[in-house]
Image (cartoon, rainbow, N blue to C red; front, side, top):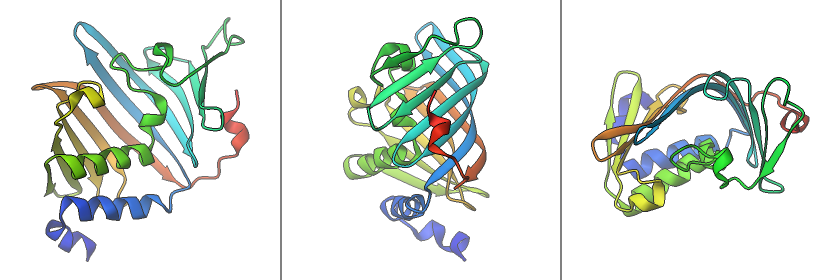
Length: 202
């Protein structure tokens, strides 16, 4: 029934539905493929992603740039703890999330990547910019032109794909002008798995 009426929803109504669903998500894990471009620079990696309210995040990079590295965001101290694989795995960095060493080349940081932060970002888009919604066979697509690119790492347009069945984001595309500069594919989503807090302590 929900699938049949989705085309009648406005973007604010749809985001509110997703946020209500996210309120029931206390933890989740997924597999993420990410490609980010900044001029001649490029980052490309695949990683296992784990998140637990109120904002604990763990990233284990399994392929691509920094393969074998692990990073954890601790919301209690607002710090990212990171380590590399191999001989230097005993060396841990403890840095503010805005430090360039633990940000993407476009400046994105780990706390910004949670489901909850993503939905707040889209709520801001809806309150301040024009957002379009369209229905596809298995997904709902939101598209926003961004009037203040300096607030969002010089992103001029963003596209979000949401799975109809579980109302979880499955793809994000971000553009600078007409150039795709951030591509994020989200797969193998597991909602509300049991994750002990000890898992987020390196």
